[in-house]
Structure formats: C-alpha cells, structure tokens
Image 1 (cartoon, rainbow, N blue to C red):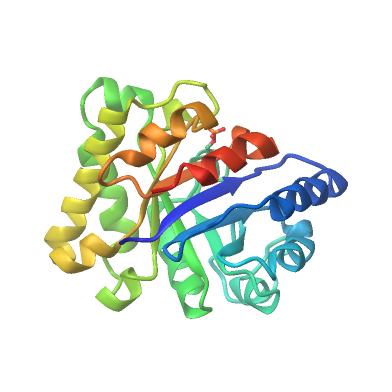
Image 2: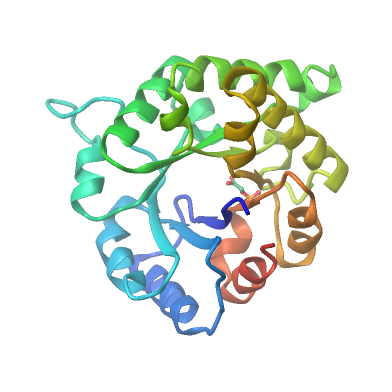
Length: 253
Ligand code: PGA
C-alpha cells in the first residue's frame, strides 16, 4: 500500500511553549500507526530542533520544515538551507505551499530548484499544487495543476520522483472552512496520478502519495481519506488542536 500521511502545517501560529505542549500531547497519546502510515509536523524554523527531539522515539512520526531556500548556501540573509535542515535531522519539507507562491512570489521554476535541493539533502519534499477559485470556475483546474506538475517536477528522474510527496490543495478550500467534496478531491487526485502515469509510467505513478489539503478536519477526514487516490491530508487550522489532529491521524487508511 502507498504511504498514507497525516501532515500538520502549523504555518505562523503558536508560541514555542504552545507548540511544545501540543507536540507533547500528541506524542503521549496512544495512536497505533501501521507500517505504511506516518504523521508529519511542519513547524516553524525555530521549533525544529525541539520538535525533532520530541518525536524521535515515536515510530513513523516525522518533522518537516515549511519552506527552504532554493540556494545551497551563502549570502542570503534570513534564508534557511536544505543542508541546515538535514543537519537537524529534519526529514520532510513543504515546497510551494500556495501561501509561499502568492505572498512570496515563488514560481514553478524556483520550486523545481527547491525540490532538487531537498532531494540532494535526503529530505522528502511535500510538493503543493492547486488552483484558485477563478480557475475552477472556468473549469481550467486540471490543465492548471498539470502545468504546475510539469514545470516543477517533470525534470526529475523516476528514482527522484519516487521520493516526492504531492499535496493537492485547492486555494479556495484553504483556511476557508470550504472543503472540496470527496468527488472533487478524488477527481483531481486521479487526474494528478494520470499525469504522472503519462510521464513516468503506471508503476511509478501508483507509488506516489497524494495528500489532500484545504479545511481538513476530524469530521471530514475519514471520508476524504477513504477515496482511492487520496493518501492522507495536509492540515492547517485543525492541526493546531490536539484532539482534532489525533482524529485526523486515526482516519488514515
Ligand atoms: P487549512 O490549511 O487546513 O487551514 O485549510 C491547509 C494548508 O494550507 O495546508
């Protein structure tokens, strides 16, 4: 079975003390993760070391950064490199979250570089894609997401692609409380998989985990994750509440 992942994206929320307490609650809660399941926490940079420490004895719990530089090292004040993340034993990194694309101007080409640099450092990139409301209203979402995949991912070899996780996050569903319907999510996930299939072949495409993001909560996670091509979720708001996120982890296939 493909890897099923419940990924928390804290964004720019919680103080160090609040974040530490939240993670403590999560690691001390008995959740029996199966071999193919994982819980991932994308925390703010200053909390990475604490977070890695907190989950290090928990099987299949991992820490992610929310971003990294597209540059290797050097005079880039305020940036954090993939090599720095690796040196802290961070296993995952979000790449191309829609908020990074929108507020920080990250292009598909820059994101291709970020993917390369994560992979070169043994960090699993969680590559985010998804369309805005206007694009969906014009029924152009499939072509739009396909373009994002082509421009950021298609330079990768089969071996490299196998190390990437994809998160489909329709922008109109992020932080709005307006979740995509199970049908809409499944339809886009199947489309993403077929795009991968055309480029990389059936067996590679079948192995890639594709997460859904956008107002996932305890009450809708199970139904969303039950879909054939939905391999878990990337969760913002609901990941800040221990009881919610625990249920979301438990909802994994
Ligand atoms: P949300 O955010 O769950 O608050 O909609 C998801 C995300 O942006 O990753």
